[in-house]
Length: 298
Image (cartoon, rainbow, N blue to C red):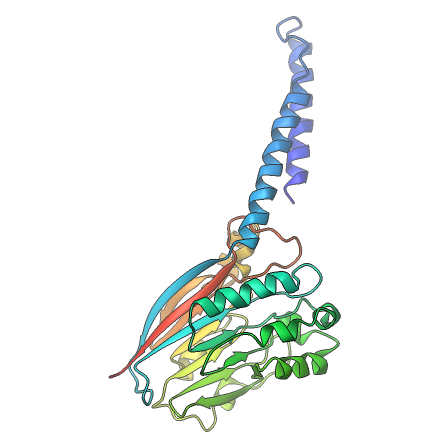
């Protein structure tokens, strides 16, 4: 997307140079200004692409500390690692996934949450490269949980993807909840690109005196989580625009396209994602792993 503006500027420079020579012959020497301008612009374009590729492949760890004023059984504090939008497939393969698993495990998580878009639409590369076996290496004593993103839910091989998640030891939550050690709840919503139950219906049977953690791939209609009494909701999807100026668009579409937001008693954390969709570059965003320290009532 940056090549077109660069070439356009080269054409503009060429026209300006020709016009200047016609208006003031002899003033402008017959230097090949267009070639110089083009070389500079293309060098700048190459630098942006190289930086973008580095930013997409060099994840940062973003840390948050949140307090939930509810008792969580024997737990006073929880180390949660959130990863979203891995987009595993043809472009992001087994080698990068192995590095991700190692990076997550180094953070020593109690709980790992995968907030959707695990695969990049097509399940076949994920299967052929045996990536479920790599995901099995995620080490979290309280479990690894996932939800569907729009790219997962739209796959023609969704039943096989579900089976692969089970093979990887990952609990895929689709409009359902699980009580973890009878201390707190992890709730997973189906992606809003497909038919799904209301959050109130999904939470049927949940004890509201216990902490409620929700995964919803797209950070949309946040007021629904607030009305349902959710304590913390984590999301991804936005990529924070991934490539500038996309960030300006996601900032207008979503109430929070990256970072932390509190509405009433509900806290929201949105990741800009670990992987990429389309071109494997990031400009104005970074590949990200999120570490959340949750403190409960004493």
